[in-house]
Image 1 (spheres, helix red, strand yellow):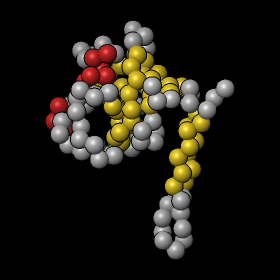
Image 2 (cartoon, rainbow, N blue to C red; image 1 turned 180 degrees about the vertical axis):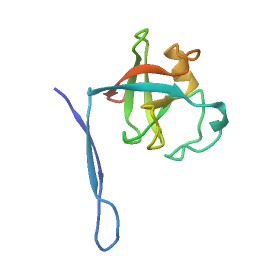
Image 3 (cartoon, one colour; image 1 turned 135 degrees about the vertical axis):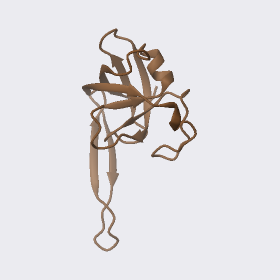
Amino acid sequence: MKRLLCVCLFFSLNSGALFAQTEVAVDSISFGRASYYHDKFVGRKTSNGEVFSQQKFTAAHKTLPMGTYVKVTNLKNRESVIVVINDRLPPHSKRTIDLTKAAARELKMLKSGVVKVSLEIVEKP
């Protein structure tokens, strides 16, 4: 049975706030390309306000809600890692996800730089 994570933002005509509801199916799988962050981002703030560290298992994604746990699998070698979304990719990015070096190391993708991956939404480990 699939479970859903639900993220809700509310819109009020008087206040001008946004209303949107996003449901993300737990165990849903998508495919794309992954890369990892450059060291120049170390110490900067991520989109959710955390200080970026290459040693954490975090990632940037275009649309997944902040705090979503994602199992990322390198399709070439089947290595996988679980990361939490804490940052945003630019809307025009051709990549699906950007990982920290710690996560990229687990996937054995540091030399290649960009790899094809599957993404699976999972519950908090």
